[in-house]
Length: 237
Length: 334
Ligand SMILES: [Zn+2]
Image (cartoon, rainbow over all chains, first blue to last red; front, top):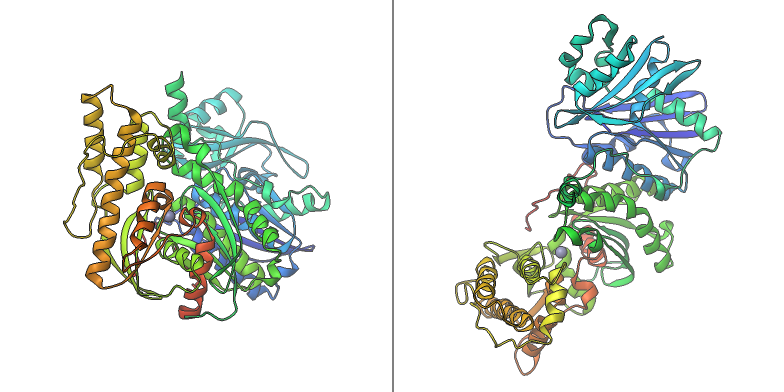
């Protein structure tokens, strides 16, 4: 089988190709230090085409498209999710949607403490989820959350356990975690973006279980409603 | 100009319609599917960009699928894929463009990024397959008010545009003020049928002053009148406002034709669905020297058939658009 994976939840545009034995190629563009305007819509399709060409495969051979559905940057997510679902529709293959926070946590499954995945939500907020390591993976023990860095810090304080925090959100708000002292460690730039290797591993086991979606059903995980809807609700109450 | 045999799958998501169409040779519409989001935006009294962008992602696959089914065509029988890349709402444009690029790489098809206003111009070419430039076009909608001289395929001159509100924006604002709901164009059109267009003499802004338009003063005049005359008949107010707006639009279009010496005039955009404007435009053709083309309402409001039409010409003239090309929310014409 040939799997195409995409993740565009952060500033990083990620494309990965894998067969049943593992990764055969990947392209990553942009990163936490990239301060130019996001260019997901310009780079994603050429990156996919280039990656296929360099790996000597054709999109027509792809058996499923995996995609990180966020939460994260709205425009990035819309480019990634739209590309994944329309590609899959055109190729007549299924989509395997995976939350991008899960892709951050999975590579830290050997950490032997709580793993906290974060993504910068801008407006001085974070998306996050908390995971417990289990044999062979991680198990999510919180909802997918949106809140201020201090909300997460309070949550970790209450849990009172050692934790490893990863993702670009933790880099951006590193100072906010200082009050937790040595109980909490930040995973650093190597774990800033959702892992493409994790996308392949998680998607392949789901593909094997035939746990996938028809393309039209797949949507970004936003967590944050639009300002217009929020304002409307405030007015209504 | 006749474009050689080419079947285009076209996508339009620049504002609040998710649309896809299959068009042959730039003139023959095999299918045209439009999913309107008007209901989602109605309570906000206008298009909310974030809500529009989210809805496009939800609807895009089904709209594309339906356009192929209605055309009786499979993707294997499509020669090129097109999408509007501007002007429009950035987050909304991204969805259609990403979809078109995805199809392009999946099926190895050329991608064509299209200008939304240019697409409106080509709606008339679908309506009248014999139509050729030169022509003068009036494009009026909630987002744009433009007078464009099309000298040839791909050669345009913007003669005039609004200096403040778009014409459709004025309809929306007046409709909201009169409590007629959203979208305002159809609401005013409906109510005006029972009113007297000469009951109130509203101003005709910038009449006789070149090719530019202004609508915010007209809107203000309506507001002031109703405040001063709270018992005024809503139908009369709507009809009189509509008459003033239509007068200006038609006079400016005729003026542009006279000045350029171009004898074919064309209208497009959502406001060109207005019955009073359509009637006045068609009257121009009777006994006059002007040839008038007013596309069907489905071709005037935003749709993807017009995108498929212009894409065939752009592909023939310029070749494919690079996949690296960005969306451009304020893209200029020519
Ligand atoms: Zn339009």
